[in-house]
Length: 467
Image (tube, rainbow, N blue to C red; front, top):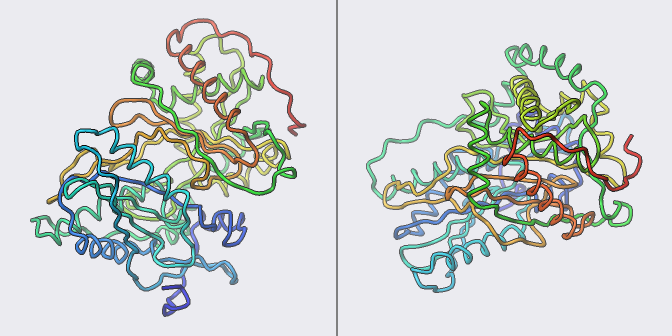
């Protein structure tokens, strides 16, 4: 069913995040409204699944969360969001390779291959709902449930909310004695709150902070292997890796000993790595945030995610402990004054100047810390375990903004895992592998001896004029 088939609904103002996506609108074939601007998540499900009940529960989720049936009307003035009538969620059932139940690694890899295949597929922004599901079954008691949603309707946090609600709705339909879900907050309510006096008052002082904080700053941009003019056909590849448990233990131990978080330790090490690569002591690293500072929206589904520029001055830092302290201060200052990136750029219009240079591209750093992540929880007749550890790279996957996105995560098994998404029209995989290996070496060195003197920056590759 297409948007044109549905009865029109009352329009609502866009959220700031939606307005920002519209600024980068490249039509329905690429960019933020393109068919690969999506999120694909998967869960191993233990227990006998009734596909009719699963279909009904998926449809319940679409009724519950309006964002999954909301279209952004981009060709009107003013632009607005329109909530459409519920429609069935496309559900596909597949039989996965019949591996031995004892071969857990084989089943894990088969599930990961399924997720990669779906990430290389598309989901149109004009076909409602903006959610698809694939159930891959190893046998009657073991399956992989994959959810695919367009990124204009969801973020990483939302995917966990969807699965949590789906599990509860399925269990109730299966006869489990669970209380009904509380009414869900809606994304249009968030857009309305952004225009409230409360939000505007909180933003006023934050704007002043960012105006001062980012004076003269330029966001991180790294040299590309090819210019955009040489390779205009945009595509995104993903390189995946695992760094084991020992490095994770060193990171978390250092974080605990310095009143920091794993994110701060990893970002501090990335700051040192960038300093050695570029020679810059004024490092501005963009990161994703959940964008859910208001507790009332933590159970909502929508595209809340935000970018936050984290600026750290490394001048005079003699040891990694010094860098950690500077990075921690930068993070605390920024996170307590978070506002939408569009509003930050109002106060620092030159922040992204380097990113626009042909021959340079953005590099975003992220440590994934989503809530509600299922790690074997039983809800009614089924148990759910998120598929987080991934080892299979892919040449075509979910799109990211132009450049690179480095994601790190502590998996449920305790490993430090990661993936690096990159614009494959701009970067060679060999370059990406060197970047990941180089950062790992620097991180290992720093967390092993955080009090040791820092060496001077190494020679760095020549780059186009960055101003």
